[in-house]
Length: 266
Image (cartoon, rainbow, N blue to C red; front, top):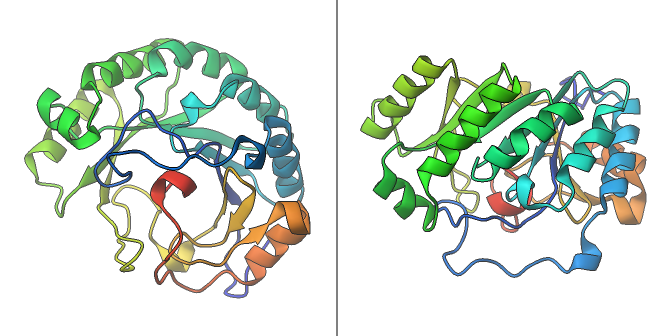
């Protein structure tokens, strides 16, 4: 699939839930969120079917996100189903790593190719304050479990305030080098004001080369993170919704009044 700016669209990011077991200050309100009604959430089988249609249209890269994808019930079963779809060359997941200790081996066995794990600091107290409830030791155990399970391509997503020479970012860089993890630096963004930057060490935020569509847990296809344009697979059907999203994918992000990182997965 190519959009009207001749960008090849081959990447589908799937938010499997809007729920999370952390309350990161840059992502979610401290009091939590109003949960999407259970009946509105796509079933695992619906996600599989939509993904099959997307792959048939040219998608070959799929990433599971949240919220936190590991809090979605039967997430390993979803990975198993997606791994069976012929044509997916890259099946990945972004996770905060809190539950990775127990899920790493089953995910690898189910067919997941790669992991991105959020890690903004190695300092226990700063991690607790940033996430409002998390323990960085859980993430470190999860990373160790992922290595032991055989994941060879593990990336660390490190959110920074402005620059990569910040002490926490430098500590994460050193930790990554020591353990063979790639580090991607993501500057804090604001959807409402339309402030975003290219991810250092990744492709996010690079509008001229954007190849992404996003599927929310309630079944909306968004062609751009920083835009309110979306199309419902429930109303239009998966193929029509995706074609509309590709056709109306904007040249560049602007701002969004309705999107939030916890609903659409960043």
